[in-house]
Amino acid sequence: MKVTWEALTIDVRDPVASARWWAATLDWEITSHEPAGVEVHPPDRQGPSLFFVENYGAKLGKNRLHLDLAAEDQAAVLEQLISRGATRVDIGQAPDADCVVLSDPDGNEFCLLEPHGAS
Figure (cartoon, rainbow, N blue to C red):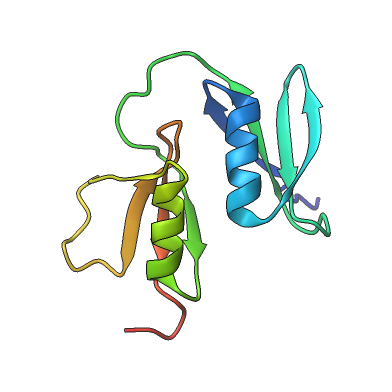
């Protein structure tokens, strides 16, 4: 029996705003806006999507699952993300970590990695 990964579903307060933010961050497209949620895909629709669903419950603690983003120019992308509403967060990462831990405007953490081969 073959199983494939279709989407990562993320609970947020405002699915449309979160989908727009992540679509702009990843240079992806909003492909579906339904009552159940808003979906974002890569332009070629290859690979899993992000699916944002409404949840007004309080976020307790750090996410148990998060995205790792790779950037050719970590410093430039970091500046851009912060200007668009991302914030640095401390989830207990080491001070000399190769990644920067951020949260999106809805409070969901993600990591911005150094370019592959850097260090």
